[in-house]
Image 1 (cartoon, rainbow, N blue to C red):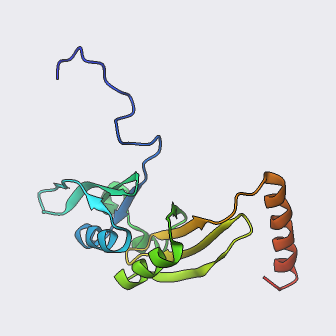
Image 2 (image 1 turned 120 degrees about the vertical axis):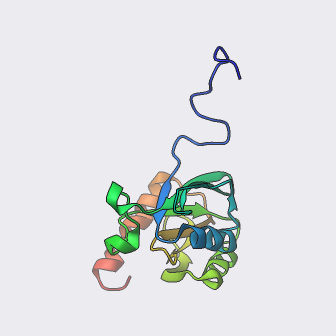
Length: 163
């Protein structure tokens, strides 16, 4: 490509935000994400030690960048940290089926699937590498007012020990 060709500031196939996950055991993680979420992996860039420095996974219409943890460079995986403070929220066509697939691939349940006040049927799990995934299927389209009303009702039940 010539230097005068216009460069798209957001490459084709990418969204504005692309998460990057660091794991201990990137090759095993690639295999897990394929089995659990149907991920497709692009070519991996490997370091001199043969470990995956960078690979891009496509799940549905979204990309995730993945690499072997590098704690000496400030990139530890969640297991090294004792957990993760963030998670990935993934919309799927059939949450029950997708959740079961992830469990069979080796994920563990954090929160069982249930209908949520905001209109999603959702459950969350932890993958074998310490990352948290919430899988959801939209069941109802609610107005902001209805979501607020249901959220307040849910909080009242929770405060009363009924949640």
